[in-house]
Length: 354
Image (cartoon, rainbow, N blue to C red):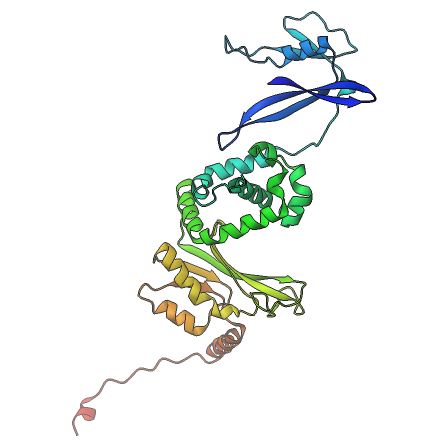
């Protein structure tokens, strides 16, 4: 750490404002300067005291040095360590930011080794945009305080410590930069899930023999476009007046996603299962998996195909309501009129010989 000054001409005079700054090496190897504390205007004696205060590590001995801080209006007692008097009235709080949650998000990113996966796919642009840091910002935002990209640009980035942690400025939070980064991700969807599956297996000993499959939808309060996936369909949100898209998702019981697909808004649930079975087998291989799903997703034909496959696919699914009533009726009749056992009489000599 060191003291850095900035000169400013104000009220007809030259003023010098001081800050405590530290050098920090960021993930890509660059060294950036980070302001630790703004001191304002200080005199020569205060400057000397602050120089002592920031020398918390003795370069020769490698041992920490103890420093005592006291307010400027109090007389410091005689101590065995250096004393620095602080003008509390001159201290101000500027742009407070949450730190710990964003630091933890970056640590989780490192544990999943996502840098190794994304660096070949997201090289910096010719203009110097570090797409990897843009993606890290988007992921931390979704993890900690999810919302729209416009909200990230307008409000969230300034209140977070992502810029400090990544050694970046507000340029990576420009709205068009965020949208362009999202466009770059879609082509690597399949490879990302394969990489995450292997990493989850190593970290958590996750097994993928039970999969949960479900669908949801999200609607748009806009006019229907001439093309694309936004279409009218069955609305789970009770908004049949809005166009929507259908989202299919496969997760493990622990909540780890294995695959997803964004489908047109008029897609019927019953038409999606066959494609997803093939998609999972193609990406992760055939295995004795158990699929758990709502009763509205499979049809009798798709269930028969699952049972008749070369490697039979096991499943757990609710019985349709119409069939439940029929089964209840059969069960009640069986209780009222239990079948009597019939025994054939052993043939006698008279029966066998005319």
